[in-house]
Length: 140
Length: 319
Image (cartoon, rainbow over all chains, first blue to last red; front, side, top):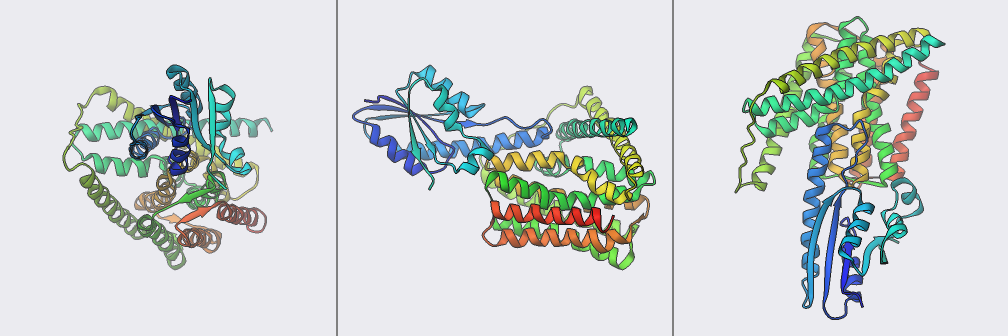
């Protein structure tokens, strides 16, 4: 039984992630949805550009959390949307530990090329998460 | 050999100084503008357009005014070719996909194409960048800025009909001092960049215009990090917009402003090879984007391959 679920998303494949999360719920459950605004930029990025990036990501995050709230508007589910700034993997693990969640649900399925070029948040979380993780396959 | 190493180190240090000084300068100017009551929209649009392009502008300006116009012209044109084929190509390869919107391609893409076409046509017809050409370029930029500000205003109006925020700040001495420091850093850094580039081109026996084209790798570092990071974070409009905005600024202002002060002579190789390549790269990007309003990894490889062909041809056949 999973009573407290931490769900993380960057806005892609939300329907699949919502569907798999709902499959985990039996009875009442608390779902915390986390959107991390990744603030790290390379040294020579102009400050104004960094501010612009954070603004845009924050706006995107608000929209995603709003959509997620609608997706989990079901009887017996308590939904909480959270947005934090930082490194996605670190923030996911930190929140999972602080909130003592039962399971983390996140998307996965990057191609091998994408994984090498962009990095994989899910892979980093797998190595340091304090609880069970459900990786939802989101790409063919 | 020791002298070459010293010059290369000095060039890298100067580039970092210029990029950081540009950052401080733009930041302080925005604060001063806000304190003087200039619209936040106007400041935002100009700051984002100018912010990443100041190193190219400063280097081109100083090079042209200190008797090395080929470095200046090479830097402006080289930066434009590299922005499209190199920076956007590499970013598309890393991000896998960069999407865009039809409206942005119509406005910024078309303007970038018109800009390259105007300067290339002027070079073919006149063979130099004269005062009159400079005036035309600057008028074009003012019109483009007006279009941008209008677009920004209408989107802001839609977003914030209910809650206008007054961001007017007090003007303090520290901000003015930082703006002055940023400007001094820019001037000194750009002068050092031009000096190192000219000296290195003499030592390597390569033409100054080619040295300018290679210098563009360094002066476009802010664009490189902006486009790559935003593409990886999925901020696609910022990625494509930065490239188009920078290319428009580099020609219309980067060559427009110095040509008001001095006629810029241009080498035949730049007129008949570099400038047409710049037009071709802009057209190639527009063609690739227009097919599905996106740049895929394969299209990124096409852009990077085009750049490699250009630079290898330039270094071997036309150097």
